[in-house]
Image 1: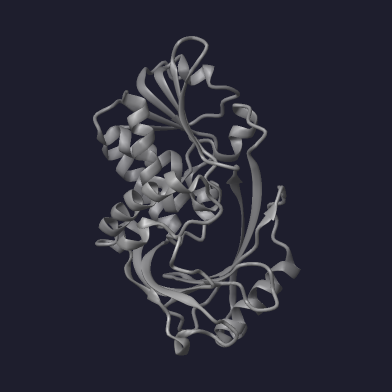
Image 2: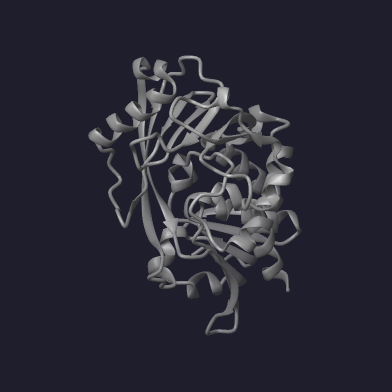
Length: 320
């Protein structure tokens, strides 16, 4: 036990926890962040991290989170070497513009793609320039920014929220999949995703879509260290090891979009478990001892995308 008293303790060191802690600390509160895993080993560290909503509800609230988050990421993209955030153009196929929400009015260059811009077999798509984030760099940036704001980051494993509540008047639950046991909340479940990192054969734009004849979403995301190829979405799977057959299928699908990827040298395999829930839980409740517990979890595959908007809403719940 540290014996240190804080205004707020944020539990969870992924992108949701880090971002929430940054917002709170920069508002002037005394903040501690408790994380079971090193920041670089959280699920967020292997996220594909393209700014686009994926497997997240409820839609009316997501819309405002997207607008707030996009504003932050565009500011961070002014210094990509420090933050890991870049604005990159690309193509989102089979996604009608109607019904996406008002956040799309803030997206640079968003328009219907011309037929000549679509890969063979695709009938519709959207062109846009959106944030694409190098997560290892970005997580280091958030951690440094948090410490610069005076917050303390501690490696701590908790079995319940009573423990942090002894050291702070407000606890913020950003535990992702951990909420399944800690809350406990049986509606939280993993959606396993696998990625393949390859050397870049000249890809400078991102692509997301479902290749004709397949069911999984395919994505090609150029990062400074290579190209991220994906993906998969296996519900209720806790398997963290890469699957060789799945990796081969990912490379084959991506190569149909960019043939040069078939010959690209494989650098790394990545697997992460998205913390899914029917809807995001972002609300304040009372703890048995009288303290306040703010839940901020269940972001599915859009944690990076909505992190700033959710952090700002969580901060309002902390201070009311």
